[in-house]
Amino acid sequence: NAGVTQTPKFQVLKTGQSMTLQCAQDMNHEYMSWYRQDPGMGLRLIHYSVGAGITDQGEVPNGYNVSRSTTEDFPLRLLSAAPSQTSVYFCASSYVFTGSGANVLTFGAGSRLTVL
Amino acid sequence: GQQVMQIPQYQHVQEGEDFTTYCNSSTTLSNIQWYKQRPGGHPVFLIQLVKSGEVKKQKRLTFQFGEAKKNSSLHITATQTTDVGTYFCAADRGSTLGRLYFGRGTQLTVWP
Image 1 (cartoon, chains in turn green, brown):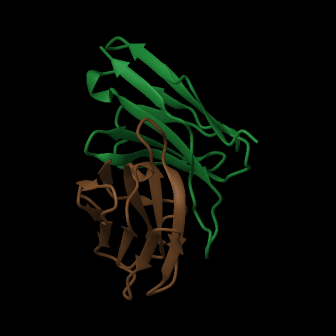
Image 2 (image 1 turned 45 degrees about the horizontal axis):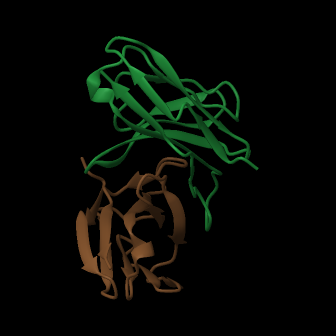
């Protein structure tokens, strides 16, 4: 059982380049999300999805696109990379239901992105 | 704006001292979760609190949920070097399906 798998682990981009961070989970979780983590800023939500075909914006969505064509995959696209997008990116997923045990997130190992 | 306030941002303690981090929300929460992130690692779920006034223990860690379900704390008794990391609270407001609101975290350093 792999859990949440993120690729690549490390990436260096030049300003203006585009790329996609991949995220896949094998737990049949409905909810998937992308966070970025910067020093002193904690985890900030970029985009999230509560099921295939449904996506919504989080706190810091500008410059990023997502899609959810399958339950398993939730790729994050950087359209035109900027130095301000240098960060560590985490994908996380969970079941969605009410009550005890709801929404407990499983995180991927992270993707460290540097934009020059 | 910041949905969940977490303090302190940093805490440095000597091994054997106690440590506490606090989370506060302006709104009543459905539940609150705590995560730990080791240096260079990813956040890992520790515990979830659901009931008003709930207290849960995991060995030297004690988690509390306030009576009004607006605040929570994590207390570590007699810290060890293995406790090093950043501790995050994550609030479920029950308003948006699946979405959690993370505090900024408390980075704990333990001197041997």
